[in-house]
Length: 251
Image (tube, rainbow, N blue to C red; front, top):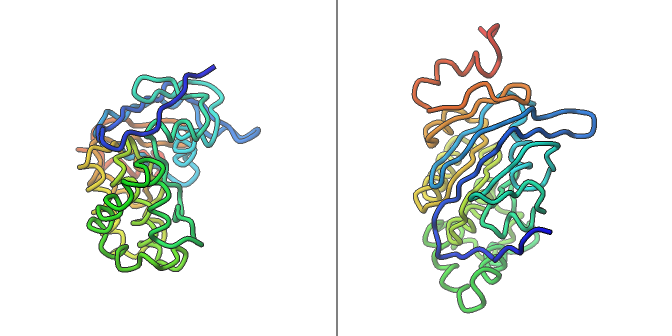
């Protein structure tokens, strides 16, 4: 039996350390990850890059408990979370923003924010948390009574990030947050991610805009066919990316 997990303390603000040790995962008969190992030190950003089908999103789902690993160990702040359910992992301060918009489309902007704020801070803390969210993202304040489903893609990403920024999650797993966005909106999303990182939250960043991810990251892991082919600093890896991602036959 696993030990109970206390709710996230929104005041703690310190990033969490993530460790994967020889983690494998499958979808039925299809093996997606093969003994993947890497770590994200507290308060840092790690970019996970690779071609389509390399296993990037599977890593995110295994870390957050959405997909069970078939072997290996996942630790968060030294605690084995390999077989914990997703809701327990989330309560430990590990938040996963999945590919897409990650909002309740039928609720207003303010309702999307107030629900997690009330749970974490209590009724009396909601007003102050909303003020912080709107100060960080003025566009959300302008649209507070608007249904979240009618926001632009970029605004919906910002709404998802506002929850993390205000509640000071320990680690944020970001899966293709800028997918389908115009370049100018990608700039805004990355500015928001930079604020999340500077606020003390660790980042596991899975991103199709590789060079943007590398600008923000402290280190990078390159996946190819479910295995780690590079794990190290960002400096100097840019010229190797094509070969690492596509293989030695890449042009």
